Image (cartoon, rainbow, N blue to C red; front, side, top):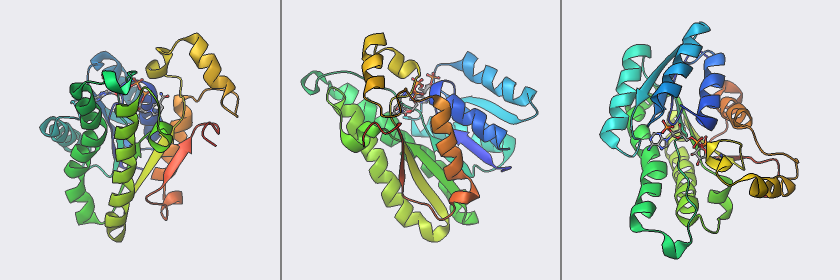
Length: 244
Ligand code: NAP
């Protein structure tokens, strides 16, 4: 592919799998992290050790100036970002009446705000070149809704709205904007649910297993490749049939 990619929340879980996949396809990758410096740097070293190009950059994507500065550092190293993956995310488990305004705002700031900030930072170059690819990671809960995760689901629905609307706005400039909506994927985010709940979720999944980070990474790689060059504004569900 030979492009510069920027993956938010690339230090762990789904983001790490996306970073590995894009690097394997020849991208130079900016690995954004919030707290997991050791993991992000180890991933960058792993990719560089295999002959690829990667750099770890810290930023809270909810902070517009920090996100833009992280993207600038990657661009100084590898050139303008042509592939942007907005993956950074956080979860919560609260009844709506127990959801503080702070938590509500944080969910929107990380998921919708994070995408807003990174897209604003990479868009001038993409518009100038009339080329670019943006993939936003939403969730099946953003499509279907989820009890006890209202703030999470609402912020992930916002990401879908952003994706579809921006895809319409940017299609004439040959910039594609798509979304991947994972189902239940085995990462730190869902391991906190406990073995019993996870076993029930497997039972509810027609494919008979939980998703793996690599399942999501493959979908992202497909949307990024030229094979998908007439696909924009779509939400690709990667859930083993969970919400069918
Ligand atoms: P995870 O294992 O908990 O990893 C979350 C990643 O996001 C970490 O790399 C973390 O960085 C980063 N992050 C969190 N807040 C950030 C911020 N403010 N700025 C920058 N980075 C931040 O989660 P995951 O399961 O891989 O989830 C990845 C994405 O997929 C999320 O958007 C999530 O909502 C979505 N998703 C996950 C599932 C699932 O079942 N796992 C299902 C549907 C959607 P640090 O470690 O450096 O702090």
